[in-house]
Image (cartoon, rainbow, N blue to C red; front, side):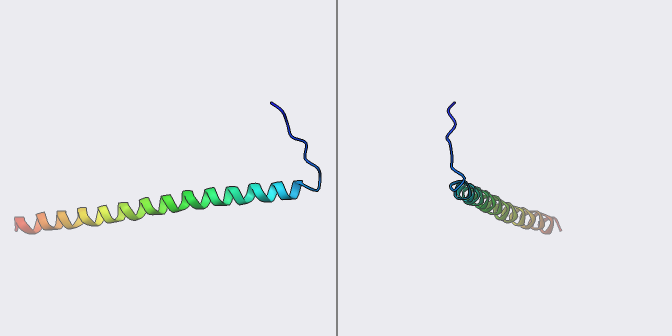
Length: 59
């Protein structure tokens, strides 16, 4: 594997670029997790309503 030689002047730019990439990936992952949580909350609300309906039907 070849390593690329980077001048000292380019290092801050490369580090900044890497941090931006990581921030974008973290943001995308966070958004996916929050979307899944929202989906799970909706499913739990539906389940709770169904259980309450079943309990009400038994009375």
